[in-house]
Image (cartoon, rainbow, N blue to C red; front, side, top):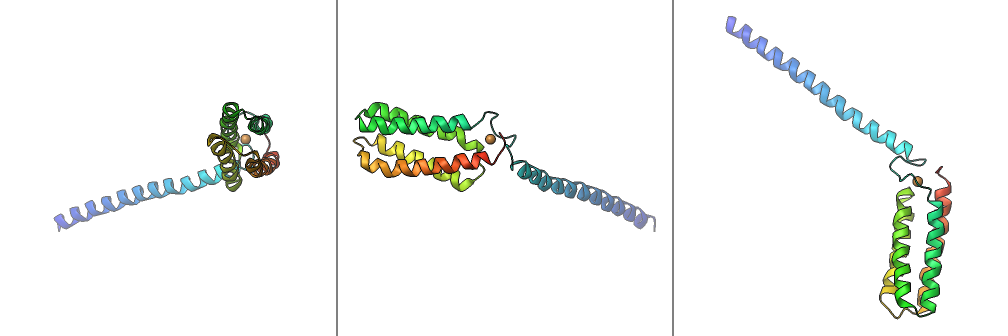
Length: 152
Ligand SMILES: [Cu+2]
């Protein structure tokens, strides 16, 4: 009789402990999604994860980088064009953390890299580059519009 009472007591304690532990862990997992939901909500505006700088001047830089690439390719200044194309990609990388539209972000980056690759391949045909430049300009316009929907 005594033994079974003790056994019951131990079992009861185990049950309580595991209940408490279970409660604690379920509370923890319940907190996590709500925290990420909060994060997602704050992404509507300028997120805290973003660098604190204004991306609009970067869009101007991007436009200038692109114009430089075109001008230098046309002038046959391959080395300069390659530098400007590298600059074009690095400016794009600076703008990207401010973009919330994943598709647009990918396309903008791809367009910049495509221009860089074709300039780096040397002997770039200006007319072949033209289509890529137009695509980039179009994506830059969309990006500017996209960035204007957020407060920076
Ligand atoms: Cu931003």
